[in-house]
Amino acid sequence: MSGVTLELSGKTDPGCVRDRNEDSMALAPDIGLLVVADGMGGHNAGEVASSLATGTILESARKEFSSGEEPPQDGGGGSPAMRRLDRCIQAANAVIFERAQAVAKQHGMGTTVVAILASEGSVAVGHVGDSRLYLWRGGTLQALTEDHSLVMDQVRHGLITREQAEKSSFHNILTRALGTEESVRVDMAEHPVVPGDILLLCSDGLTKMLKDDAIAQVLAGAPSPDAAVETLVAEARRLGGLDNVTVAIAKVAADRGGWLRRLARMVKRGR
Image 1 (cartoon, rainbow, N blue to C red):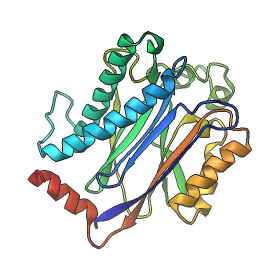
Image 2: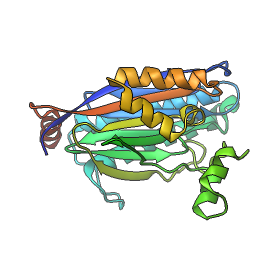
Image 3: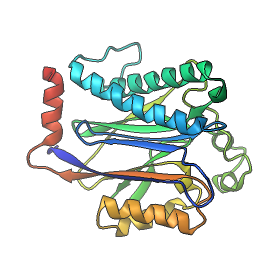
């Protein structure tokens, strides 16, 4: 595969109803990292949890690259990028959990997280909760994550349909979150990417307001990642903006200089 580069854009917005924005995001084009987190908890604990998640993952990822060391297998296998991203998310879980134990007002706080880390010709994906990752390719939108929620568990077990899940009053009940327990199981995957692909990370403030076909329509018509992000956030607000909404986009573009190849070689050499 030819070298690729990622065009990144992102925006987080409180929406039209909430007083605070408990979403957080991190974009790091130099290491090919995108993170979206949607916090939960009383007082300002949700805001704290999501901020700790994105900040810790970003800081940990930079340390992983600067060390130049191959991440250990730890019994989990997967590519180096997958192992790095998993370690970063696990570090965030530990930081949030320890803070929640130490500060009474933040006890029980947690956050969703969805993150991608680019490597040569692919992206590693880490996911906990109901923030999502989509792939737009060749006119088709595909969800690359499955929500860790009560209603999606019911869908997976054939108890309700996806249409019924969208209308369920239990839609916001998560079965897994970052920081609420001392350990967390992170869904890890890796997906190949090609020039023209668009990777969309979002909090449920977007997917509560826009169905997948509406998201696909915006991506089909947007001339740039910036335009797509602005339009998606604006549409979520126009339709009521019932929750905080965060959208982050990475577009894979052809790059004759082979940015990701150079990055991969730098990592292997420990630079």
